[in-house]
Length: 349
Image (tube, rainbow, N blue to C red; front, side, top):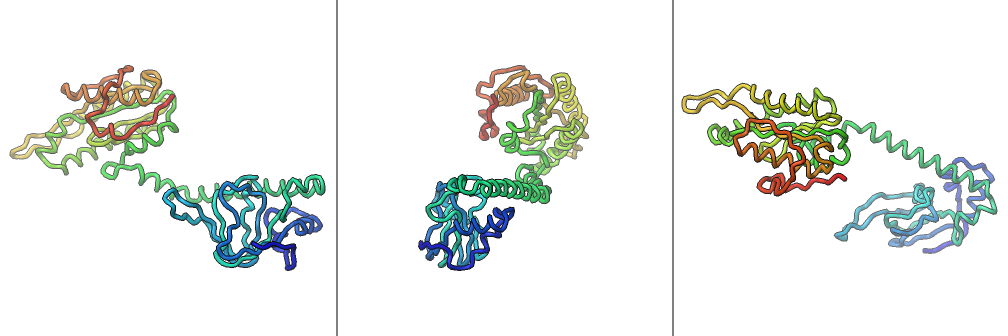
């Protein structure tokens, strides 16, 4: 990498965003304290962990910026051509670079501050210039943050659609357990009601009428769950693996939770039975419901979840068709015979 003082037009660096607020004489000061860099193809401009004590204006050539993944592959982040500014945002934040910048072809750049100089060197010499540069850097960062926010807002529906597709169960439209696993620490709000539901005799329905009948039944149950969750505002209707479902509702105390659990139980029981055929009797719906309220029934979310699930299975195996309030039941061996145990939950507290 060669270096020299300016012998060509250096006006482009005076017009960069970082120096936009400087007066003419102050921009000339910046120019006089900059250096010219000649970077050969393959030459490295900066590396990860290196303090961003300079930034660059590319006059000629082509610079690649990339990261190295754990497996050794390159993850290209940006490509810069003549007229682009490189590293000014890191310089303004007094940060360190987090990527490599390498010349893809012979390149010429302007560097500020120049060789052997740091921004601190100018504080005593031209304090007003440094003050303006720092103020400009704050404005620049604020504008970029606003720009990022605007992009996010403009694409909010797109982001929401991706989020929905990632977490939605395609068969029922309910949230997957992955949503609960990933988001529980963010959405947990005192008091938080958690209700689990498991349809009774579901295997009889599937064995006698096929998986299509089971899928249709799950859609009907999902509609009940979603209706209840929507009516209570901040709520999520969930589907776990197999035919276990649930509802999570924030700002819902014990008295409200008890009513909702009873409502869920009665509404499923009131669903129109699957009609009889010549050889198969009608299938009436019923369900086992287990519920608890965080943190009243258990202040550790993972324990509360496993306790509710264990009580659900115990009651379902005992005949079902009931509603149980799970009051701080120890989650010993909870869920070990179910696919629920495959997905660890985050612990709260």
